Image (cartoon, rainbow, N blue to C red; front, side, top):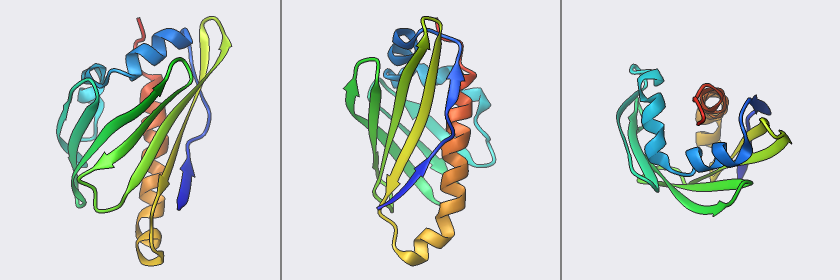
Length: 137
């Protein structure tokens, strides 16, 4: 398995509020308008999963497979040409400040690894950045 990690980001909000927001994927509707329409289309979500199309990959889905309150949310892909596991880690800094990091593991053969490593790393970093822009209430 190949592992990709975002840089550590700081969110100016309480860890419980962040966890409760991120662990219900319906809340991704808040950032739907910030998605790059030239790359991501057909975005939809419910409490436990989201689906979208990425040009040129096609349709993908993410489903929450585990929630560890106030620490970790784990996902796996659905309808993906490459098995992928992703988790979001949260760590409190203060009562109103939380560190966040995204880790992704993918089963990539050498040919695919060369083609998708950079876009996957960039995508993980952009996702982490996007999670810092949500208003957590």
